[in-house]
Length: 168
Image (tube, rainbow, N blue to C red; front, side, top):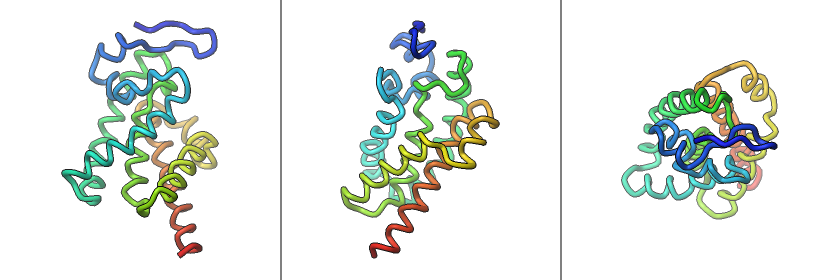
């Protein structure tokens, strides 16, 4: 089921989440149902997900898995966006999860680096500096949903690399 709210348009329910595997994936295993900041909640989910994946895979193994997770997101977000009537609905946060997993692969160890990576990624994802905003508006469907967050991850990694060069 999907309920209509005055401020957000269509808002998916737990029934909608469980009605199709694509919805469960696109809505970040339920984190997209958060009434506030579902993208931030999805980004936070990447931390424990990375820790779990790290039990079985090296960072290179996680990196090798990311294209499959990206492709899964293209399908799941495309299908779920059509069902919700909004190609990039705010409840879909698989894109944040996958993109931030990429960031975590390259983030130096330590809480300060992880917090900086999180903050920078959220900032780039929300502000959408060029060309992210352009691509967000022009590239449609599940691929478009996934692509803008991949670019936010790229900007985050550039910022982290610059900070690491300056800070040593």
